[in-house]
Image 1 (cartoon, rainbow, N blue to C red):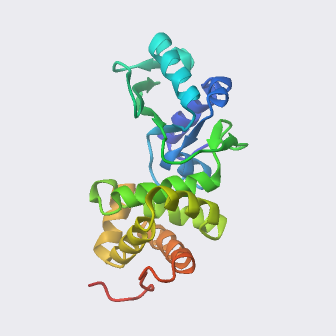
Image 2 (image 1 turned 30 degrees about the vertical axis):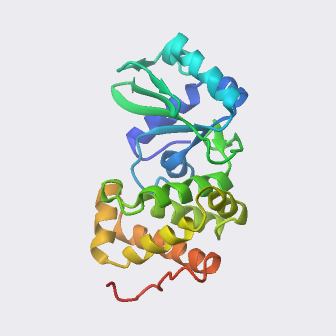
Length: 243
C-alpha cells in the first residue's frame, strides 16, 4: 500500500525488502510505534524500525547473523550501514540508510513477556499480534509516561489501538501486569489525568506531528477503555479540571 508521508513510504519499502523467512524463523516481530502508525492510519510521524524477539534461540541466531553478515543478513543491497552494528544483551542496533534517508533499526531482546505474531497482510512483514502491541505499549507507558521528550506517544498509540480494537484486551493487560503489576494501572491513570492539561495535549500534537483533535480523540478512547478496565485506578473523566 502507499503512504502519504515519503519517509513512511521509504520505511515500508525497507520492510518489504527484508528477509522475512529469517525473521519468522527467529520469531522476531515488527512492533513498536512505527508498526502501529503504518498499520492504523499513519496518524503521526514515526521513523524508527523496531522489532522484538522473546525467543532466546531466535535472538542468538539473529545476533550472530547480523554481526557476521551486517545489514545484508536482513536487508536488500539498497540498504546500507551508516554506523557499526551494536549488539548486547538488550538488543541489536543499526543506523541504516535507504535512498538518502537515515533509519534507526533495533531488534529488542524482550525478556519480560512472551511474544506472538504473524505476517501482517497490509504491512507484508512478520508483525507483533495486536494483543502484544497493546501489552508492549502498556509496558512502555509504565516506563516513560511522563517523558515530554517522547510526546506521551505511548498513551496516544494505545488510544489509536483502542479506536480500532474497541477495548484493552484482557490478555494484554494480564501480560503487562504479570511483568509490572499495579504500576500498569497507576501509570495509565497518571498519564490520562496529565493529558487533561491542554498544554500537554498541545505538546503531544507538536512533538508527534499530529493535529490536536486527533490527540484528543485517541486519548479519549483510551480514557474510556481505561476506566472500564481499571475502575479503581482514579482515572478522571473528560472535561475534569486539571490540577
